[in-house]
Image 1 (cartoon, rainbow, N blue to C red):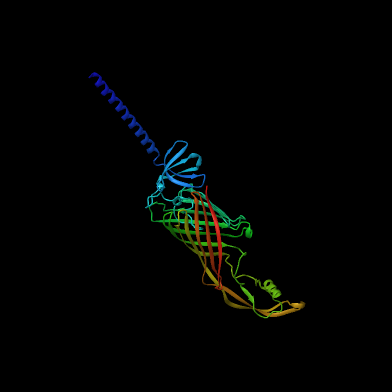
Image 2: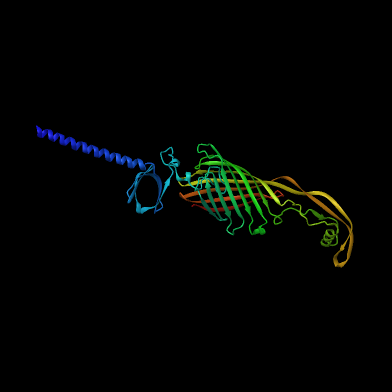
Length: 387
């Protein structure tokens, strides 16, 4: 009987030890799982494939992750090119139970092909864009504020850009942003040209799919380098030598017969923009980007005739001519709006979390002062990189 009691006591002790070991192992596994269950990573393999999932374990030789689409995946460390931690707050689950695509929080989702939306910038969302026209670099100096530089491949013109989103609430239905671009002609036009555009944008939607409406004002100062306006004066009476007659009018009467009507060298235009983006497939998006410039349309109209009596000047064959010269003076009047449109339908292909390629079949529709409409295509491509 004593032997049987000892055996029961021994078995009870063994059972308690086993129970304690199992409990300790379960607690340890739970602790390990709790410490890693919120670790979401974007894992890029050497072969170019990518996975987004919750990291469950990492023993130094392989990584175990759980994805919504595939389930558990063991990935050897030797096959991994990089592992990027994703903010848990930015990870949401779609209606079909999959993690959101990385396009939703990529560095380029606050931009269309050329214009930008009003969604808030996130700090460290720095990126560059290389296009056929030239390079751009944009820095997110803080949440909601970005600064950038834009140039052509010859380094001129050169522009500085800034955008500030002042409604950055994640649950907001509509976001707003103020933006500006200030440019200089650089060594072109001997540095005399300056210009810029200032705008206000309202955006509805999220980074995955949204639509934006913008209003702004653009200006340009080109000095005497560009002018499509007529001369202010015209000699309309018969003269023997118009060139010498014009010189005499300038000398004796201080009249610059070649003065242009465009006295104001600063041009301005109202700007309206409509843009949007929507996913097409797993790693691509369709973009439409439209900019309209509504400048004033001018026309030279008759003002008055000025008669200069008995003007003496040297005519042809060195003969001296004295005659009355009639000069017609014109004035510039606004006759309506002169619209210009840039239409940029584009496709963006997200090659990875920090790389994208986009192509646009852009077209320009412009009108001249005489009412003629000119249409021509400007297809272009660009590459985007995060840094």
